[in-house]
Amino acid sequence: MEQIFTNPILNRAAEELFEQGCNRDYWAAPDGSMDYARAVLTSFQKSGIADSSPEKVYATIKTGILFTRGNVRFISKADRDDWDRYAREYERRRQ
Image (cartoon, rainbow, N blue to C red):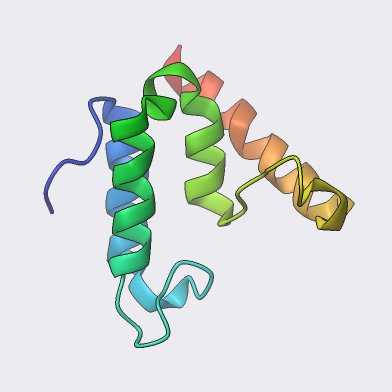
């Protein structure tokens, strides 16, 4: 797989995502391809989000949850807790 990120931790998380493929339904396109995931992850790198908030990108890769001001109220507490756990995991892996 091509490297999407300049960050090795994010690259490994992306590799794991693509290896699992369609088993992660929230990332698969309707045709079962991983084109949607690739486009989202590439936009994280190109926009600078991957460099400024890598813990958020990591949690999003792991959970498929992309927080916005508009959708946060619709995300369950369990899903928020899961996302927070992965953000903390990123910080531990970074050290």
